[in-house]
Image (cartoon, rainbow, N blue to C red; front, side, top):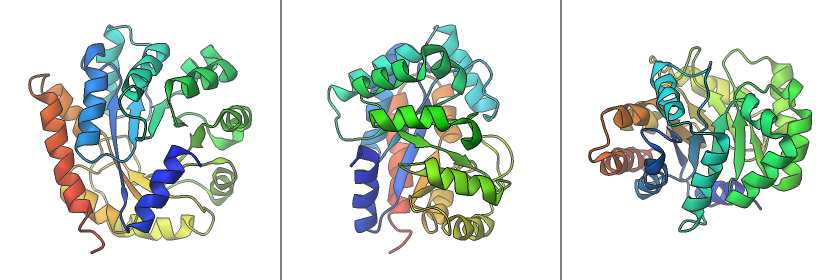
Length: 267
């Protein structure tokens, strides 16, 4: 059983939902990343999504685009990101880590080489934003062979045929994009998300996390009522943009409030 599957099963048994925060590796500085990962765990994170900086993050809004730009100014590479995970694993062997990024850096390294290095570093899953299931057969085969969970995005516009393909290939969890647009967008319609999740559950037998548009404890609580996991990213990256002074503490405090609200969602 993978770390992701174990965490998800334990949470389900406790009638709780996974809190999955996102930050970009190397932002605001390479030396900050591992400490911020630990700060998120201290705030109640169940799984960490760590963004791999990329020069053209098409699915990301301006907040996360700027995070990639800041990290790339420090020349943070995919191998650097793996090194951060390995350092994190020196003191945390239980919290799953998912790398979220784009296909180009992984393809440049090669699927086999990447998967081998990722497992050695302690990575648990890979979410490749621009890798639809129709093009992912080779990477999924390699990832699963090495024990990496391939995680896919589903959106309000995803057709039924693609949902079926994702259901066949994905493991760990599926990330449902709650609205049309890029990360950091507003106007989250929880009722609409609930209706879509009911549709997706006809095909998926793994947990569904919901992200995009979750900005505070209240919106996280509302999503936790209907989803297996809550993903929050842009709001955390905005804290990073406020400066390094007290950043770890601020992330822990913010996430603690989100976790506390989520824990009242199904009481």
